[in-house]
Image 1 (tube, one colour):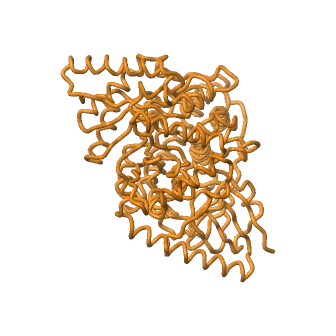
Image 2 (cartoon, helix red, strand yellow; image 1 turned 90 degrees about the vertical axis):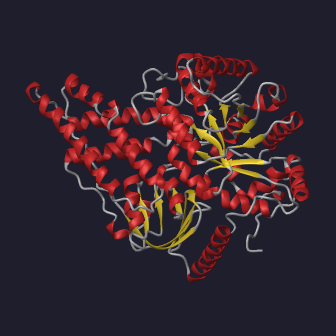
Image 3 (tube, rainbow, N blue to C red; image 1 turned 30 degrees about the vertical axis):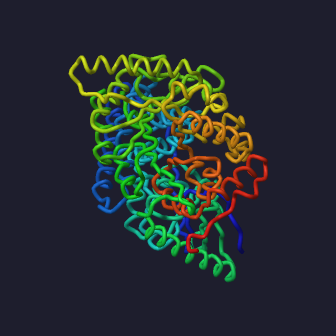
Length: 573
């Protein structure tokens, strides 16, 4: 019987093949009291399981092929760091001793506490970190309890159907010629989704019921662009999808051939394309994408998966690595965007949500200005890096002109301080702002006096403008970057920047969607920043765009005529 499953399109493309359903053995968590005399032994059992899990991940890391995406190593490294986190070691040990309970119960108890914290987070990427917690603790629990780990050896030339996939699993995927995958859990920002895009494998995540409804041997069509899984399709449907698959392959080859062509519209308007990155190691991916530079370096990722904050020197070295890896390129570093909804392990910054809505609380620049002692170390590292190559500083979660004034004053104070200490610092550090608060977008003309550039963060701007949590299944259907109100704010911001002669970029997910490229060009956007893998498609869209026609599309969109700007383009034309 033919039927269709709906999920989240995590990696574009079409995979056609036979399903192999991985059914992980469930882990029953024992709960029992431990005699005082046995507490030392119980603590040692946990330490041994942690060590075995670490050794296992190190073996996996050593087995990674040299041509595997850098992301694979980074995610495994993140899991290794989590194994050293006090939350997964010290707190369970304290539970063992204080409550005299067994190690598996103590670890599971801490796991549930951490998962609850991350599920409350507003940011979708950080909320997706629950996936790491579950995968790492699952690995340790299996060593504690002697449970078997599901095998991927039967997945070669098949489509994997699983509850979820860990970064370590992807090494097997790379070596095993897997066609694609479908998972019950996950989001577009989950590790399995990011790795699918890196590997070029079609993937649909978040189906909630794939492992329950599908069986090994089922014929599947995985449409990673539309987020659908067709099960046991008819010969006619199968033929249609094979033709679509062939067209996509021709398109991919053409995009690769055009990789070095400039991003210029049909009528000669140059568009600048930049990449978003999280870690210095992402520079290699930026180089392959042929981006002009980095439009968004999310510096908070230097603070993740560790028990303390990186020192000034460590931050400086990370920034220096990026600058040296992209000589001559423009690099924009966003100051750390953490807060009530983005908890760090560092006790110095571990502020817990005190309000009903942490998304509207102490985060981004608000938090940094509240903690200048900590912010100073961060800014000093950025200023020191400015002596290596030109960089720009971007401030997140700005609400008022006064906040920008405060940040700029601190930058100048630190410049004087560093020069007095003998450090080399660039004569000028451009300071810009993220436009992600609706009031700032509508008052953008007031911020041109204090900001050297704008970067529109459409993810938060849309969420705040429409009062919709994009991570909430009950309302995320209302999350619409094409809403007339959102488009009006984008257009107003671009116009304000143009009138003042300051650059305006867009670094939210909207910039990475090639279907919306003509609309954004028509609104006046001339700088896009996105994850590196999206650049070839967006560049192709730009090269097929006529500015006059794009402006007509934009006017229609601002008037509420939505069907005029969802057109696709044919890169084979």
